[in-house]
Amino acid sequence: MPPPSSNSAKPVYLDANATEPLRPSARAALLKGLEVEGNPASVHAPGRQARALLEEARTRLAQAFGREADSVVFTSGGTEADSLAVHALGAVHGRRVILGATEHAALHGAARAEKVPTEILPVDGAGRPDSARLREMLSGGPPALVCVMAANNETGVVSPLAEIAAICREAGAQLHVDAVQAAGRLPWGSRDWNEEVLREASLAVSGHKMGGIMGAGALILPHDRPLMPLLPGGGQERGRRGGTPALPALLAMVAALAESRAQDWQEIAGMRDELQARAVAAGALVAGVSAEEGAGEATTERLPNTLSLILPGVSGQTQLMLLDLAGFAVSAGSACSSGKVTSSPVLEAMGYGAQAGQAIRVSLPWNVQPGEVQAFGQAYVEMAQRLGARQPAPAAGVGWGTGA
Ligand code: PLP
Image (cartoon, rainbow, N blue to C red; front, side, top):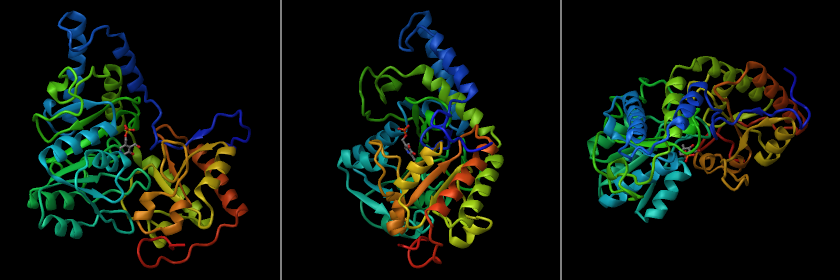
């Protein structure tokens, strides 16, 4: 497929980590939800019908993570699920909060809003939280809520949750895992992402990151338990989250998770790896992956669809604009809600220095076509050549960036 050249052509969408396109099964579930007339809290027949669908969705979501139905608290999305965790599992219990340095703003913002004592857990050059440091942090001090993401939204790097969960268990700390990007994309049952490792952790998930629609999410607790809500409202979700649940969006989320789990992610990983090789040959660095690894077989475990590319010396904003003009939708730095492109705090925490402002994130959606990735690869290489990207220097010091 030739690269789309005119502004009238539909852009090639490569920003799935911002939001995934709607999946067919999610669309069907959404339409079914829209047909329901009742409110799940009403006792009449339409209300009972809505209730039955809501509870079926709850059971399916819980079972997908090996949990009982009442462990699921439905929310409006990942941000609310993370906020509820910090509030109800952290602040309310007087726990200090330990946040991985590359956690999403949803958690940093929640900790600030709750005014809880917060400590930052450093990460290594790949962005993986430092487990030895966590052990030290937990060896003294008050009880803690530890928040570590399953996989990073910018680099896709998977956290060593098996190790982190074991350290938390030993120290009696509560673990909360932001699974917004991992749920559906990371094979459930893999080393760091399975029922046994996560049995005492709470999980945050979000519908639109799996191919559902915006406005649905869940906090999945280790087991059924009461929580002090952020929104008391009318006592919905058994007093743990007030407000009428967004039934159609929640049904879509649960359908999307099932479809996402059934996807052949290897195929997508293959496209990502080909693109990575082309970009590296054109002078790019891959955030989270050492220079040697980036040029060959990458062993750092990452989400199959995610690639964070640094073009040394070229701002992410410039790259984003050029690629947008060429008809490709990717993101730069953190997908800042204001639309402004800033230096990525994730890459800064990983030690990339000024290069943290020279990255773009390519995240392949579930329905990406090989021709689209190839066309993007071509456009990227042309851009790199035109801008005269400097060849990356060998990795040195902290992180795997050149620190330039
Ligand atoms: N956590 C992570 C890792 C994310 O990437 C995002 C969204 O980008 C969120 C939380 C927030 O999720 P939502 O958009 O559903 O509020």
